[in-house]
Image 1 (cartoon, rainbow, N blue to C red):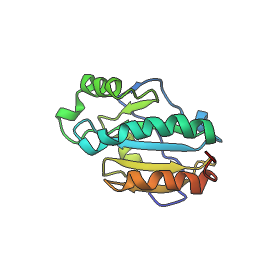
Image 2: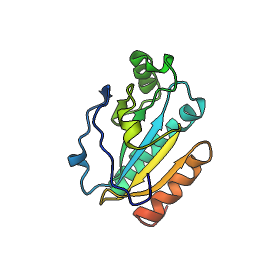
Image 3: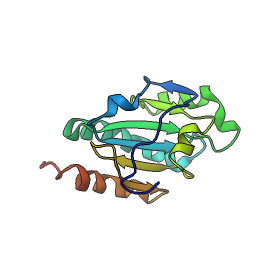
Image 4: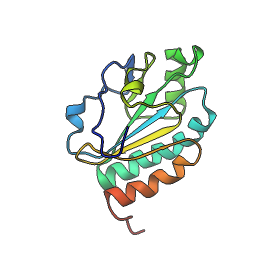
Length: 151
């Protein structure tokens, strides 16, 4: 995907956890889409940070967070294992289990973890993947959505 691309389809998720998401309900709200897998230790390390952002930036900017579980192996397609990990890491935002890679393909995503930040107009403003991407996401959230709040 290129910068300024529109939010791709979220159709074809195998199963939603913590509620379903429809693109129409995201209109006018910034969105962070996070791709991860249960077999990715780097992904799991970043989940507490995502929970913090969901709460803090949800309040500050109205940012919505959606997780997409992208299996990297046959073992990763175990829906119960994905649900167990979602519960273990207290992911309260909607998480789509994408066993058929429908959403993964719509995003042209190849990596976990991967982060796609969309502005309130539904245009992609940042993409990052891998170990260093997590450190860049918060900076981009402030740059794209507004100044950092004063402590």
